[in-house]
Image (cartoon, rainbow, N blue to C red; front, side, top):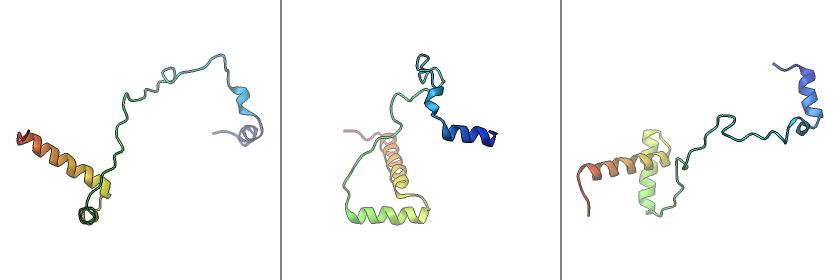
Length: 88
């Protein structure tokens, strides 16, 4: 654990002096790998208010956030459609 003097030093000095601009590091140098694609996508959909209210009520009964419930229901529905071989 840092001593109080060390902590006070960081509070009172310009810490940019400690950075060596000639020896810059990349994320790979420090062992961080970013995913190739974001794990989720943000979408916006319009649904009837009654459906929205039903989803919210169902989510409350399950004690799960409604957006998580929507994801679960979509995934189950898609899996069911795929497994039944329905395609156009």
